Image (cartoon, rainbow, N blue to C red; front, side, top):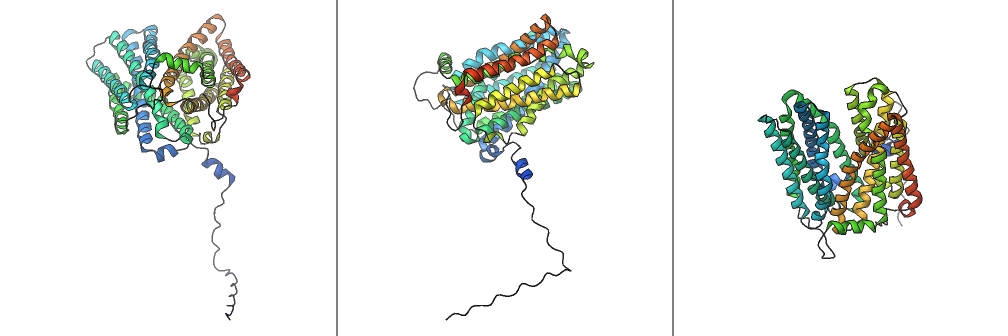
Length: 440
């Protein structure tokens, strides 16, 4: 019969020895902060997505340097704000035209190859701009033509790049991937102009163009390493722009997401009024205009960096409507304040809300639409993103000329909120959209 071993008594604590430090408690605050920052899972788990994200971020910085340098060069050659403003029109037309056709092409060919062609074309145009600056050709027509070529190459390649993402990361990581994309885009919009201004001031416009040319090597390398990305066509039909528009007409949730974004861009984007309001609102100068223009991008960047919570949201329709309404309210409040720090804070809040809306709208489009339609829908998305702000410039400038800048900004923000309320009432299916059961 086995005997029971007596337990040894626990020795009393030695008061001369210090007690070990307590184990750190997992407080609620620690858990909250760990989930608040951007989810880096797509970067960790997908080498292809990681290379593509890094390449596009670097190229975005270079492209923003070029955009700033072109404006500076055109104004230096002409001294005309009107001719400088035509630079935006030169890029808008090919963006709208080729955005739609670029999406159709992306649904028909190898998207990797199309992305390589578009990025290579953009790099070649940047090299052309550098050459004309080094040779001091002083040709406004050449600058306009180069900007138009840039818009065309970007419009052709962008739908291909965007429609690749659902093939590189699993569905549950798409919100995080889209949040990371907005971070890269807004890094370009904040860091690019800053570096471009320093480079142009120190070494001339050619330095910005050369930096942009070199920066495209990162995107070209990322594209080169990708596998073939032919669309997963199920119908066997030739992809056309009209088919994409017909598909969108039958998909109320996707149409509503585009309508919400157009409301924000057309009614709630008063950037055309910044030069007119800096003096009466804040007693500022051209530097203040730069601060106002940068504030939404800074807020958008912050929204991307602190986007860890987005992956836990399933009601994407409600999230889009709420964030667009928040944008409109922030813009309306901006029209009423006369304190510069508060005005910048409101613009940053609007930019943050816009980032949240963009993340959810992109995710809805990528998940709910079939692969053979993703390129064409991304083309429509480019048209909305490119055309909406230009229409917003026209709307805010027209209302301001008929009334006052204050009334234009205030009514624009409130009109944005009114459209959101209308969409929420008329589109109950959009309110109930659930990412776990996506329907276009």
